[in-house]
Length: 82
Image (cartoon, rainbow, N blue to C red; front, side, top):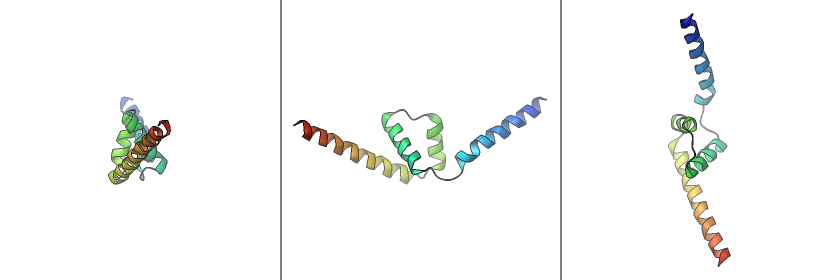
């Protein structure tokens, strides 16, 4: 009986992981991961998904674009205040 429940658990784990393992992350997933990482609130499940499915160059490029936009928005706010 215990062996049967172990097999069912393994089967459920494999089925729940199958959609996450296939393919690269979408643009929305990349943007949300970069924003969450920038704020420091990235959860372990999403971080693991990014490291297993994602192309590092996509995340690096998205991070650089986010950083440039963030700095430019800060500069813009400072110019508006002055």
